[in-house]
Length: 110
Image (cartoon, rainbow, N blue to C red; front, side):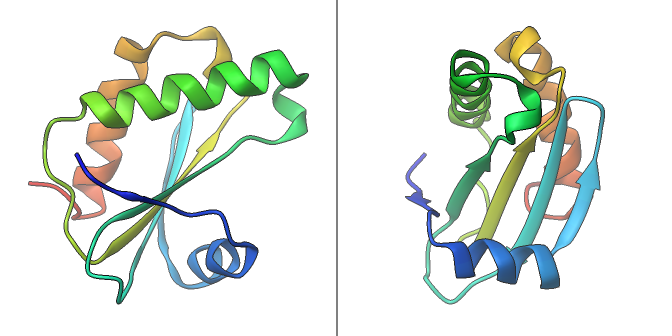
């Protein structure tokens, strides 16, 4: 699944302010429309999650779950995934159904 990476602070702020949100114990998902013509994805992990090793694991797990998602995400959409405290301790197979449910509830996938 081809996507562009979100990494500019003003993009994150815009999505937090204007986007729709779905929250769970493992993952929080923000979605907002864009004009880029392709999906853009950002992953955020706070220092509250742990030190660098835990934060990097959380990022890897979320990135892999998004890759395995399979269902195509709408074209003109920005998505931000925010890791929670439990995220580095779960497997990709545990995050995948949560991610699907949240994206479906936000109307980004069928």
